[in-house]
Image (cartoon, rainbow, N blue to C red; front, side):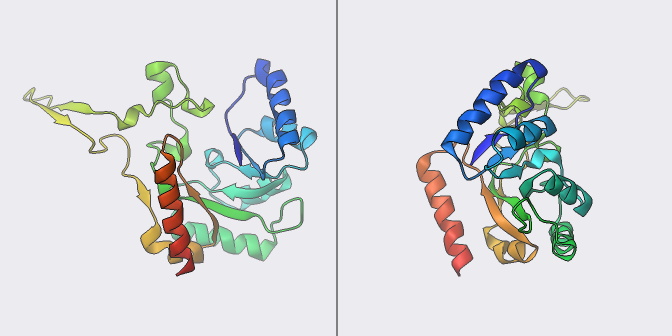
Length: 215
């Protein structure tokens, strides 16, 4: 899979079209998109490559699922803020209304299962861009929320160093202990973080989830 879920500016579209054409030759199993313009270009240039809709689109309802399926999506990464009950409700509606992608198959629900969680709604964060001019929404997040910070008591002036206690960023996600419930809710694809992780880490995590699914 190839992530193309950045938000290109208008002047970048010639380069985007060249990139999509190259992906069409490489034929990945799917591309992950968030921008409607990118989806439109992909449908025209590489209709043979499945479209997976990024969590950055904040899908929280069956209506949104239907809308993206009508645009050619085969897989939906729902908003990561949804509860298991909300995921299950969308899954049931997909089956009931037969919400299908271009190939006539039901669209699949994908959810984050393991790894770092963004501090902002569905990954739409502006902290990195504000502090370092590197936009998280354009693939350049500097993970400023996960740095070490010192907090100050405004009344007394006393300071306390916070080291690795997730002051801004939430604790890493791990669903392996309730994976059966996760799957029962309708999740058909697990999203495991690999960005900025070593190969050995990714190998062990994927193996652990693979074993958990088979148990």
